[in-house]
Image 1 (cartoon, rainbow, N blue to C red):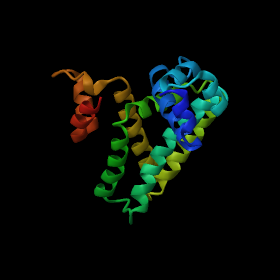
Image 2 (cartoon, rainbow, N blue to C red; image 1 turned 90 degrees about the vertical axis):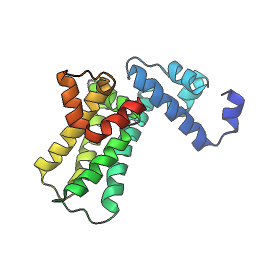
Image 3 (spheres, rainbow, N blue to C red; image 1 turned 60 degrees about the vertical axis):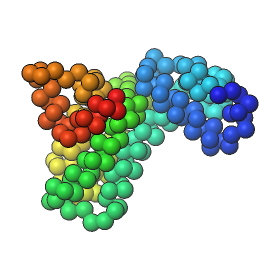
Length: 197
């Protein structure tokens, strides 16, 4: 995309272009391994343009990371707002789980999450990661589950994140214990996730 075309876009569209490019770039290189220049190249714009729009690399990463966390909260809220949620219903629990599994098809989103959580040594990223995880947990609490049930649900989601981050669905070998774990963890969604990689 050339600069003239970007200039003709609305401000919201330009912002979206940069956020999508930054998501792809940060997914590959993480916070520490990605420059604003790499994001600019991914978006097809100049590096000063990215800085002018978002400020620092840290500001851009935080915008991408928080946006990815908002996707999780929104997916859960849509299930919870769709109608009554019975905390004792396995079907309702499966609906909430399916909403999360659908998100996992977007590996860039997933990798940004993982990079954000592992960059907690950067004070601003650590603070955002803690706040965002707390917000996701608060959303899950809306199910009516007790805190232990909410913890199990969130922990299970994090297991799925780790397994996808390491590429487990693409490296399944019969007899390998990791294959048994992946099959157990992903269930019927395993084929879907393999094909979306």
